[in-house]
Image (cartoon, rainbow, N blue to C red; front, top):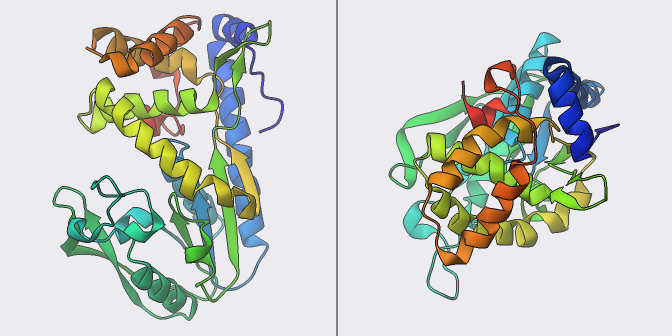
Length: 308
């Protein structure tokens, strides 16, 4: 994303003087990223698979949906599939050395089903693909995705492992590989980091998990350790495989997320293991001027975490 103003004092000035204009400028930058991706996709002919990877809370779901919507506005039929739907049943998930199951590894996915399904789609065959039911930890027996690609249709595969060669090298066709992340830090005028990239993603995830997944702040902290280990091991080594890299930060977002995030953290009982981390986040978010949530567009990527 070009020309990001990632200095705390400038962010606060824009939030104070003209929050609506500030938000509009940030949203426009993100929409231009989507437009560029869509232009790249439509420059090719034939059936196409787009692999969209990124770490937790980078905005993969919203980005995939927006790409689909803009493709369809141009008359291109598009589908979105999540790699999460290709999870093995819970009892078949690989184990780590400590006896816990490794949900972050690429080998927690049904790679054979994925390979056969995507290659069949590229051949123009009708394919029935799974839907994973996380409430029971198994593939659904009543829901599925039935897809048949027309000659110029597109399928967008989003997930942590979408750039992993274990997957991509088994697909018998040309892929467009996209990597997205929150790729900017926020500094103060003296050059000190106020919020780093992982802090920003954690705040997004904490708000979303609390609102929609019945997760406490403490639980999100506990899960975050394994999530980031998985990213370091299974995602970041392959990010340079991407044809397109995109920064999904909305630089105004701390001004909005702070309302819910501060209340959640201040009201929570936090164990000693995470207390310093949470306290540092509180101190950081308190430095931002407020922007009310209702000003955020309903179509914003931020709604993936705020809801509505």
